Image (cartoon, rainbow, N blue to C red; front, side, top):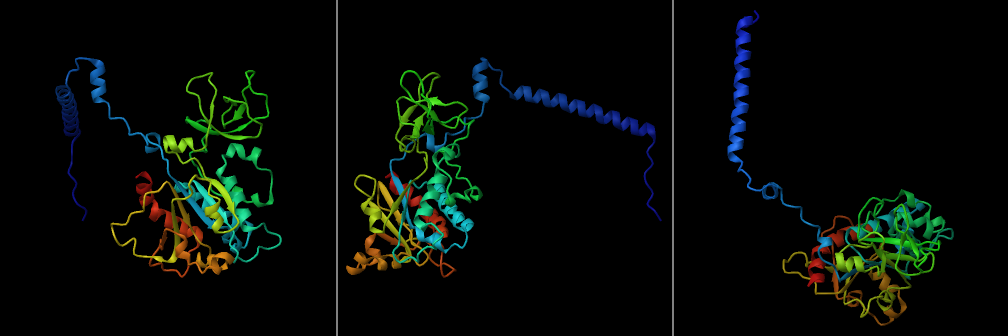
Length: 363
């Protein structure tokens, strides 16, 4: 048998609805009264508004302090020779560029390893190929067409993920610095050049420069003022921004040190290998020595040891690989795979070192 439902007459339903509406209205009035009693009467409107307003959001660290120290990354260009197709070679370089941008690398050195297998006749040398693509990816999108002519090595760059770095501002973005290119137009009548900086209109810079020169400019604070041409390191030193990375080719591993662009050279060098020290992550007291210019060197498919053994001068003097560096570390101890690809080692190693590099560089 079906359950017997309660019968409710129309009059009973009407009475319940009216009672519910009255109680709801009463509750609203009481809530308003209680809210008015809790809210203090403002003596001055501006003071009450500031007291009720939420605290302002904290400014990003990049806009509060600069960064004087640098991080350089060195790796062999031969790592792209193992990729079978142009798409895979380009994708590998894109991974290197992304890792360098994520972890604020200021310089990438691509060195040749004498023990590497020669590239195929129809292919560009691995070091040259990597350096060309790295320079292309570091350049802001609005300047690439004017700076880089068409080249077979750039055929697959459209498949790569953008770096989205601080020196790649959008047209609608308000920023203190921009990358620019001196245009071929005459500029202003007062002897200043015009520069393309990714905005709808060119900006005037504070000096006359040859057309086609890439510049870093500090945007004017008031309308009508020219943009100031500044060194590319200024956004990093004054605001702590990661302003892209420079790319350098080295003929061999020793040239990474001998051709260093920084005055005084690299004051701290770190080599990475699965044969390096694996206990540094175990102790909590590990600290990198204080530095101003740090160099981190990664090896190729077989590591750094074959690169050193294949170099005539280093092999003749019997120099061990670990002796070339101030620190020789295994950045991924206990690895499950027999080998770690260089593009994988970049992400693993730079992530492990980041808190230590920040602490040592700031000290």
